[in-house]
Amino acid sequence: MRQVVLDTETTGLETREGHRIIEVGCVELLDRKLTGRNYHQYLQPDREVDEGAAEVHGITNEFLADKPRFADVAADFLEFVRGAELVIHNAPFDVGFIDYELSLLGADWGRVGDYCGVLDTLPLAREMHPGQKNSLDALCKRYEVDNTQRDLHGALLDAEILADVYLAMTGGQTSLSLGGVGGDVQRQGETIRRLPADRPPLRVLHASEAERQAHQARLEAIDEASGGSCLWKGGGAEDRS
Image 1 (cartoon, helix red, strand yellow):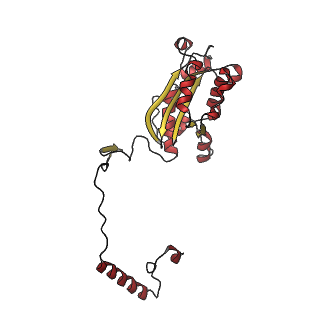
Image 2 (cartoon, rainbow, N blue to C red):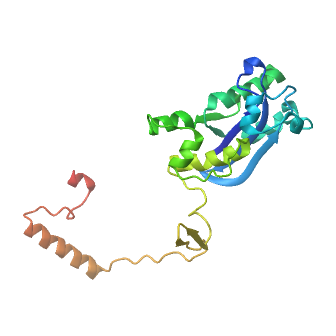
Image 3 (tube, rainbow, N blue to C red):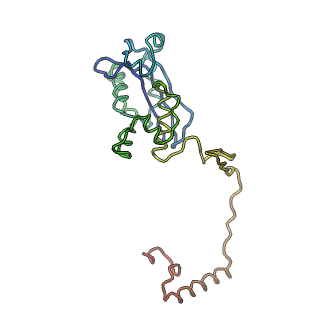
């Protein structure tokens, strides 16, 4: 299963006020493992960044002046997310902004739902932790995900943090992969030794006829001693229900 953890930064809070996306960050997961493939782009929004928004993400109008517009990168962005399940914290906000950007390009571009599915981690967190704070920072604290570099919001950094949080929330692993090819991994003070992928197959030892007879005799003895209640004698699962 391919998933793309996504976050955006914007000029403000409402598309109905003409606010635009100024940063997109994506992190790829394949079969619940980080692949190292990311998508990251700053965007020229053709409008001023609200002062309140700039205080959150620290992105200035001057910094964005020479960046490409969404129209310039839309095809590459959609190709990266196509066919994946987007994992987003408070998905209606980010999806709403992406849909708005696509609408400005014309009806032929469609909507996010035409390209991929969406999983919103905010209602998932609320269901798992009712009555508690479920912001990304709160989830980082709850699941012991390091977010010490998050002085300001940033789309790629937040996507990377959300990927760790999502895998922790849903029982996955991030930095440790047991599907690798040999070698040792140090985790929380312990060394986990992996079996090499090219190891020879394990030998299968079958019981000899004498061993099978001895086993059957033992079951007969248990059955007799228990008054016919030996569960292992005779055997299908239907006999034990």
